[in-house]
Image (cartoon, rainbow, N blue to C red; front, top):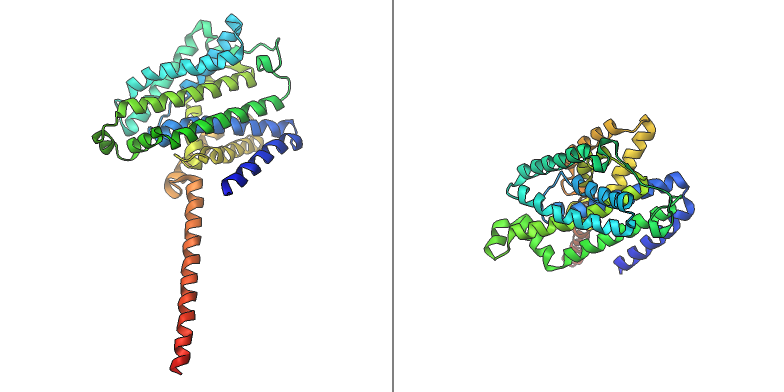
Length: 338
């Protein structure tokens, strides 16, 4: 019942927000939704399977560049370009996984950064892809057919729809045998191997799914911003943000990245308003500070912290009821003794 009420409240909020927000605030909500979608996509491999990737911007960039190049060079509709970008990222994740899954722990994380940096260097030097100058998405064809709009409202519905699709995919993974396999690989890899789970194969499955949905988010970013370059869609800062969104809200949980995105994006936008400029240096300070705070005080994320507070409150309430019941049973006994 609670889940149904929550879903109804969320749907009502999603319908009301565009009606009450102006263009600038609606744009911030879109940024929150897009960051949440990327965090949910990262959560498939980093949360459920426990493989902390810090190079996921490579997949975001592949999706953005694939859909944009197909549109500019060949006139292919962006809707097909989005799917093509997801497929390209999923295919290239095979090489990504082959090179990185040989390592474990922080060595794996460092290897993912190295691979992502190689991808960024390639696009910086690739003349067909615009090199460091980047690419502009043409605006000569607009409307839903070409996923190109003059106002922010359609991008809100696109970002919300993509987030819901990614959440649905995560929910399916969570409740299917894949979710059990991923959690076994994360928590007890030796036990998982002993019962016949092919660890390398299912790590790759998690990475490919995550890469596909990350690329979809990259394609949507390109269509919304109408411009991409290696520094915007292939940066290490973007990879760290994707991981931090999930870790801040609660890694390995369904709605943790959504909560993390609301908090992190709000902080980012506030500091940019406060200090002005692009805020790139401020972003790095925020990321580093939040990583330290989470690691020290809230290792289970905000949702884990809320859950622990509720459990402590419930435990205190149960203890109070037991004490009250015990006191009530003692009073008649004292009366009889008197």
